[in-house]
Amino acid sequence: METTQSATATQPAGTSAARDGQHIILLESVHKWFGKLHVLRGINLAIRPGEVVVVAGPSGSGKSTMIRCINRLERHNRGRVVVDGIELSDDMRNVDAVRSEVGMVFQSFNLFPHLTALQNVGLAPLQVRRWPRTKAERAAMELLERVGIPEKAHAYPGQLSGGQQQRVAIARALAMNPKIMLFDEPTSALDPEMIQEVLDVMLGLAREHGMTMIVVTHEMGFAREVANRMVFMDEGVIVEEGPPEHFFTNPQHERTKLFLSKILHQ
Image (cartoon, rainbow, N blue to C red; front, side, top):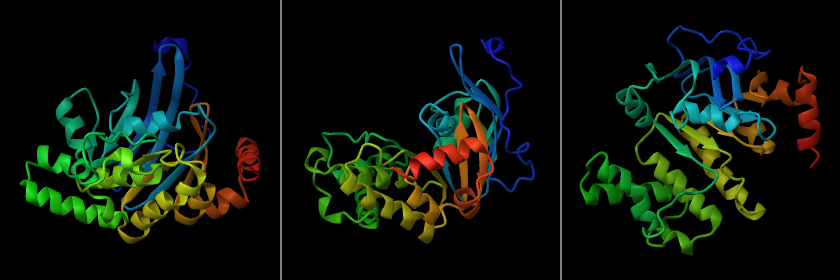
């Protein structure tokens, strides 16, 4: 399968990912194919603990596939993915260990419709951590307070707005006390008036709790405010990366300039 594409198609920006042990996420020459489609073409990315990285780029550029490789929702075909010192491989013990440290929030909320908000948030501590029900419910309520909707604890997903459902999904991802949070376009399925309430929760996580975050989003105002680093992807490679002040005001690559000219003037 891998011979259908050239393995030399690596990203023009970025160097070989560091090996100094100071990074909580490390991607080295990561390639991913879906059949003959070469989706990731030699991704190198190193992220330090507490860093907030926003990933932008056009649809089909490989953004979601890249972050799904970080918790093995997608299996990479070549290269290395190391999370908190654990290399992801076909060994499910390593996969389970990484997933216990990584929370993920998707475009769709994926809540259990037959469970209340409180039950959705408390389910993983109850079943995976084997916490007593009272402890799991107490922790779930604290997380619902943290995302600003404690009054919806006993509501079912069908009784919640899209923004409220996504905040429940964030609380659920936080329930296992992860070191890393991955957000895959968390506001793309929301009505415009609901987007800000979700972004405000994410902003609070980044600022108050020092959590390592990778956020795939087109919300450039949010990116300017919260990101330590911007990563721009196109056609399966990282085209450009750098601090927001440079990324938005002085992008180096023509492809980045074209993308920003379109997205910032919508």
